[in-house]
Length: 378
Image 1 (cartoon, rainbow, N blue to C red):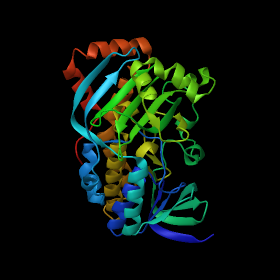
Image 2 (cartoon, rainbow, N blue to C red):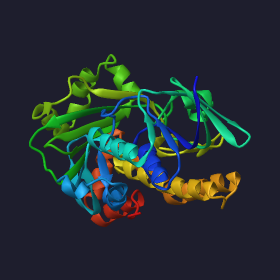
Image 3 (cartoon, rainbow, N blue to C red):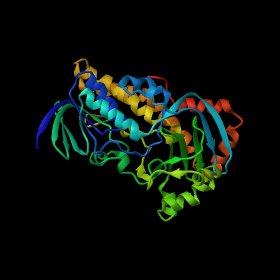
């Protein structure tokens, strides 16, 4: 197996990995990125990005202003019984599919000089006295620094025995997510969050007159419906009148739903064997907060600054790792905690009905709760 030496290797080519690779390559470093799939590809994701990320993405090279993307300024939340509240979003966001944005960032990364290897799975990362050895399905590489941006759960999580992979199902780690692209007559400037027994479903517009419909629920919900997604949607999701109308009045654009399981919202370590974690590999905010994509992008900027200072000789390795951990916690620790607390209010049918009914009378409280899970432009 051929062995190549890099300044930085990134395991995973989602938003965090691609954005980090571009920043490092533009700074003059030799960077490799390994992605186990091929671009373009669909990923299970709500596909709403807070406007806090707009300027950063344009600085990376995305021509967002030229793409005529839907700008989302309103939030609609419904309870399982159909009660709803609507609230303006002080910052707002925009819709874009992972199919489009990941492909565009991958193109920018290659143009910047990143050695981007598709259909290449990282099988092991091992640190040895100043250098890490990264083994993949294609070849091995040595590198000064490694970033793990491989998503919600991977073979590396299991190899490292990360605690969240070894716990039995509980309220934080036993979720599944399902996504479709659909067409229908829905508001283009609104992100909707419709609750049902044991979960919630988001709907917002993306490019090309499409909408992303993505929902999160418990594994128990699926098992109780014979492990049939179709039966669960009919028996559970469509009990919410809003979701019943959406499913009945839309056209699905995927032949089959995209689905992932074993999603965990538990606390995760930010450094494993001298590998910096970014994106969902570092920790997930509850999807109902609609802020995971912005957090992944912001984390890449924090990681780049720390890595750059180390590679320039301004920090020792342990200082870089501690600085990254401190900065990540300062920016995202509270938001993830607040997201968990908000998630605890939803999914339980009676509690969700009561919560929505009470919040309708207190729009200032709703605005306050939204602010707790969102950041500012970076």
